[in-house]
Length: 229
Image (cartoon, rainbow, N blue to C red; front, side):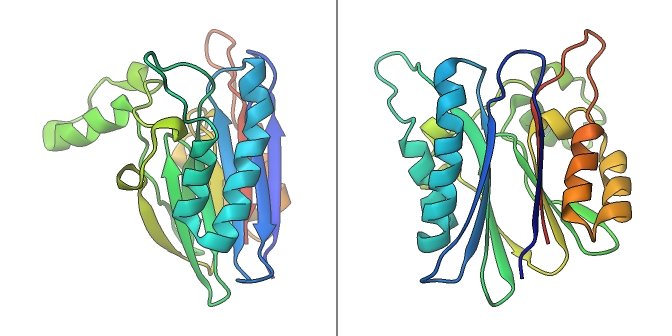
């Protein structure tokens, strides 16, 4: 039995543009859980985000995780001569009945897996900050925090070659978060909350969102956490 907890908190910049959806396919018995973070807070983005999440979850449960995320991307793929219009980032988790799970993502939404001992980040952010940090290798800490908002890949530009795919053990607890959670709550804080509340997905989701605080300027992004057990 799959138990899902979801918590959301609107940020300070406008209507919430995060959205989640889950779907269990009657034909495949796969359960898909999608998390979408819309870019900005325009009316189009706010309206489309739930549609993107629902599309990713429903198609993903039936046809697989890659098909699910790319189908969501097709709804916002209309670049024209000058890229414009609504776009988003997202992560999709699909659990099979044989206790295997798969994660695909575009952008800086994240998936974490808790095995009862260690919280492992399963995804890598598609941001300029993350790229430069990886490229620096052993050069030490690189001051790239200000570049974390520069997202290199979004749903509207996604193609199969740009969508990473990882296998995840269904045993344990899986977390999906938007950057409004993991950019404002350090990894050690997230891990401590998981350690305390891993057996209660809804309580954990609530705690993760509550742990995301405003920055020094008073800005707080939309924060959404999904916990699957």
